[in-house]
Length: 304
Image (cartoon, rainbow, N blue to C red; front, side):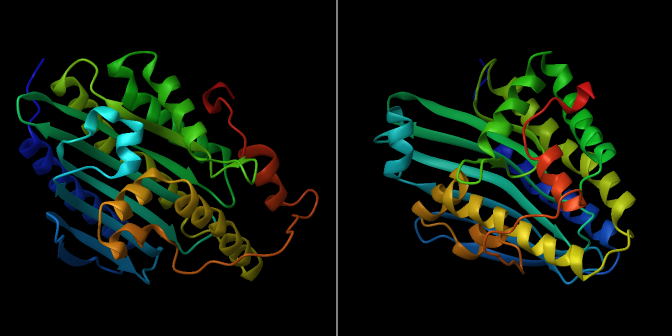
């Protein structure tokens, strides 16, 4: 088994942040990312890049963080008791994109590495990450293409990888109080160290590198689709589901806040505008109703 190398992972993540930021700026064609570097009092820091009021993206954030600490929060040791009494490093790139046009889906991606140390003991480490898609006015072509890209990323690592991580994504981004998925899924993996550091790192890199390849074609196809206030209001309403998930269920949000992370960066995932409506029910036969009936339950998109 190869030795974990946090410095090599960090170099990849910083480069990934830059490449994705450049790709998104090119897709937008108007706005630029503003970078904000921060330090964490307990150890570590990061750099947040945020694009606002673009031609295509209402808000896009691409964040890098590398935090260190002498002990783990209680929520982490409850899940992984072997982490008790260890110092840790956690690093990753996390991004969320909220487009202007309701026909362009919101998306989220994250790749991360965690390692915990204790004198006289082997380090405990793993990779995690994935990406998912949250459309408001979904197109089957886009959803199938998104999942085909995810499957292509996974194929070199085994035939069972895409089905396993696709299902994990469906389960993770499930809103039980709404009885629906947050969107149409993608990939989600965590606690990955099977096969050693090199193999696990290679998979994390493939997911990170593959994200923009999966997302950019959807943006190009839908960014100029005409829409009006009706579609805009539905987009803002559905963004509420995004907020509900991130504040109630998301592990990364919880870990970041409990470890004293930078609140502005952690909550960068929140949409800039959102609304709730009491007891909303879409009109029968409407495109809004089709989102609920055809897209917000897990299914095998590649079997269609």
